[in-house]
Image 1 (tube, one colour):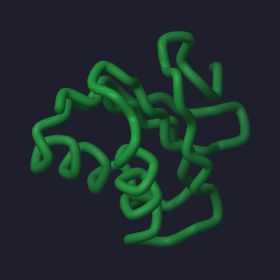
Image 2 (cartoon, helix red, strand yellow):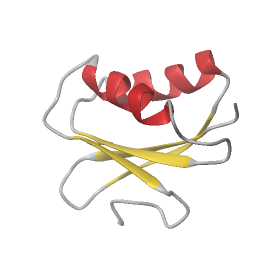
Image 3 (cartoon, helix red, strand yellow):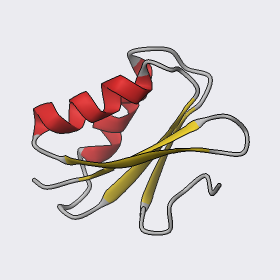
Image 4 (tube, one colour):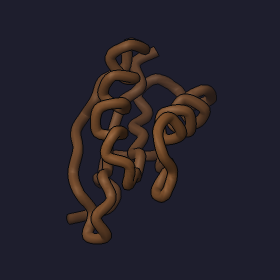
Length: 82
């Protein structure tokens, strides 16, 4: 599996961090990104599998999907809609 979906155009490497840092890092990265940008968060914390989709839902963005990388990290992609 690919660590970054081909359509993603930004990456947040949150591997090795624990909740709530993956979502905080995602929110900071999204601040200056235009609508339509897809951001993939790489995370090793299982909580990110729930936190990233919840962040997308609560902020009016789209959760695109999840996959697992060859290294065992989760690749969680959101599309910004604001």
